[in-house]
Length: 199
Image (cartoon, rainbow, N blue to C red; front, top):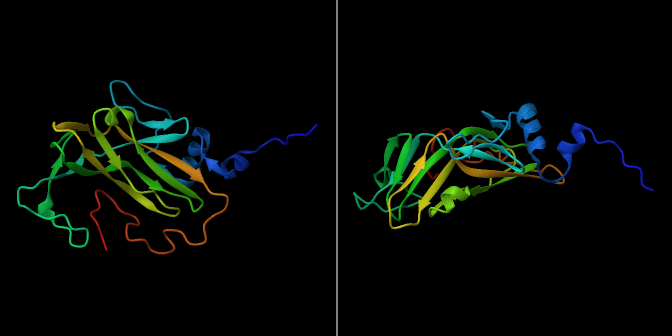
């Protein structure tokens, strides 16, 4: 019969695979991985946010860049023009039909060198035709996460600031990577607020 050794908190945090709630909590406390950190799901009439079973539901901030075609601007990732959007600071953002907004998380993330984070939209918004798009948060990266929210419907749609907007899943690697995002001085390192495309 195999004798199972007792696992310590350190063993639990360092085991590879998707991180569970208690592992995310430990990394948030020990390494400031998520600030501010909400220890359990909060609902109370809001779209839920905070720590979940195997992830963390982040909130969007009340800063929005709403894309518009008023000035017939062309969206060019190499030469991004401020004429492509209008800025709004509001608790409820209205996304025009078949358009999108940029916003950012309330939470500031600091990703450990052996963790990769994937973001998925919340089902409440997905069922309304709103899609949240975020590229992976790489090992060693830190900052507010810029979120792109697309309204795929022919109707105007609401997004609520300071409420849940996307779930982040944390994957522990079998070993730290050789070169992290910070090591290569990634262009979006330490971003605060909504960050537009950079070359």
